[in-house]
Amino acid sequence: MVVEVTIMQKQVTIIGSGIVGAVTAYYLSADPTLSVTLYDEGIGQATKNAAGIIFPWLSKRRNKRWYQLAKAGAALYPEIVADTQMGYSVYQQAGTVVTRENPDDLQALYDLALERRKTAPQMGNVEKLSAAEVQDKIPLLTAPQPGVFVSGGARVDGDKFAHNLLKYAEKRNLVRHKGKVRLGDQGQLLTVNGQQAYDTLILAVGAWLKPLLLPMKIVADVRPQKGQLIEMQLPETWGDDVPVLMPEGERDFIPFTRNKLVVGATHENDQGYDLQASDLVENDLFASGYKLDSRLRKDQITQVKVGTRAYTRDFAPFFGPLPDNPHILVASGLGSSGLTTGPMIGKLLADYVRTGKHDWDNYQLPVENYLTPAD
Image 1: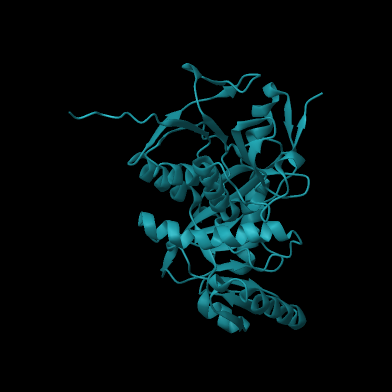
Image 2: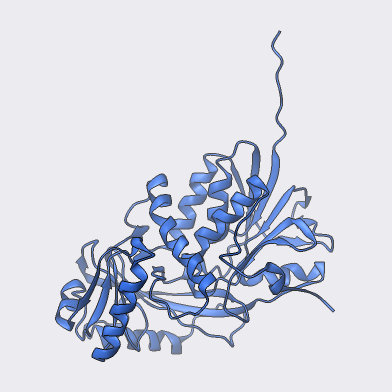
C-alpha cells in the first residue's frame, strides 16, 4: 500500500520587485516547502533607475555596519551571476577608476585602497595611475585626471539584473502579480482581488514603506530622494574591459558594454515622490559628462531615467521583522548604495524566512530604531 503524504507549503508573499525583492525571491524560490508570491507596482523603482556602480570599498562613511553589509553585497554578485548565467549586458566586473587632481589626495586614496584590500580580497588589483594611464583605460575621456584603479569594481544594469532573477525564480517556485496593494490595520494584505492570506509577508518597497505601514499605525523613518541620470548612445564602440569612472567633482561616468554611456545620478532631497524628468537636471548631467568627454552631443541622449530612493535619518538601511508582528518583514533605507547592499539584505531575509534565525547585528542597528508608533 502506497501512502501519499501532502506537504503543506508555507505561503511567503513579497511586495516589491526591486533589488531586495528580486534577490529574496530568487533564494526563496529554491525551497520546495515554500509557496512564493510577489506583487509589483513597478512605479519609481530605484533599482530600475540606478547608475549601477558596485564599488563600496573606498567609501568615507564612518558607519562600519554599512560597510560590512555593502562589502558582503558586492562579493555576492559574482556568485549570483555565475549561478544564473547572466551575461555581460547585465553585470561587468571591469574595474573602477576614482580620480584626484591633488597628488597628496591621490596618494591618500591609494593608501586607503591598499589598507581596505587586506580585508576585502574581492577588490582585486589596486593601481595608482597617471592621467595618461587613466585615458588608456577609458578612451572616451578628453580631459582625464590621475586616479586609482581597482580591478574588482563593477557595474550592473539593475533593471536587467532584477528582471532576470525573477524570471529565474518563476521557473522554480514563484508566482508574480502586477497591481497596487495596501495593508489593513492588522497587517491584512489587500489587493485588487480582495484580501490575500500569507504566513510571512516581506515589504521590499523602498521609499514607499512609510505610506504602506501607516494603516498599521507605524511610522517608518524613511524619506524619498529623487535621483535622475541620462543614458547616451555614442557612435563609437568599446570593449567589455572599460572601467567605471568616479571623477572628482563631477557626476559618475559609466560606460556600459559596446556604446551605452550613463552619466549620473543626482541626489535631490526636496522633490518628494516626483518622477518627472527635469530639463535643468538633464542639462546639468550632460554638462558634467561634457567636461570629461568634449565630443559628447545633446542629441546622443536617449533617455532621462528617474527613480526614488529611500533614506533614513542616519543614512543607514534597516531590515527585519516588525517588532510586534514577526510575520511581517521590512527592508528600506538603502539610499544610493541600494544595488550594493540590496543583494545581501535579500539573502539575509531569505535565510531568516527559511530558518527563523538571524545573525545580522554586524550589518545594522535594531530595526526598532527606524519604526515608531503613530500618534
